[in-house]
Image (cartoon, rainbow, N blue to C red; front, side, top):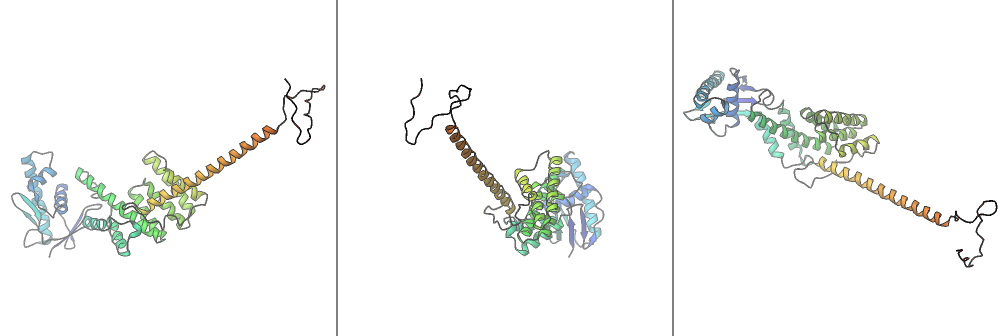
Length: 341
């Protein structure tokens, strides 16, 4: 049975029965193949394909170009495997791959892993699920169909990129939960290659470096985060990132933070909650310090008022030498002298 092996991440690569498929040099031939593969569960109409691939042409021209491109694709497939029946089924209105054809498509495997773990946080993954995600992210050899800039391709590329980052987040949280800083650092670095200004990943790397006992690397990671955010977005790090940096710099960071926290919110990563809780903890400390400072200030004010009440009258009458007369000493319990008018 003929099998077709196709990779869409990075550069397009096709094999038929283990041999590289040649004859796909023309970009429109490649586009036709990709569309038929991505939508092979349902036949494609000739009209829809012609409009999609040659939107700038009129209907007659688009149909003509489709016939020519289809002939090139069929010739390449037939030359690779010499099938008894064509791998592509075509009639006057519809196009589809032979349903008996065995097709392996990297984006199918990738999407299966994402769907199977979509409702799980990283700390909830079993070893088998983590292995499934690990295999999936290894398929991501680059963005979808690098060098293609059609609107449909850009939209799909962004969707797969977000799926990739989500799976890396889960694997990072899984590794952090297990105390495996080396694996967690590896997945964070993959994430930053894809999105260098992803601040939450910079924070995770800071935590993981601390977990590994490498405080210097954690501080340098913050510097890298600051530089990347300024260059890419023109902004400063979030308050939570700055607080984490301050904790690490002052050597007050607890490496156990964020490891055993269970997310009560579906779809929210454990480390996101760890960031929030760490921020709230810092705010609580600041509030307690502020209240203590207010208490001390109030005590000082009360003491100053008491001293002022007990001070001698600075405008008392003077003696002949110009010095103020000391008030007469009164025996305990004696009445105060009458005021002078």
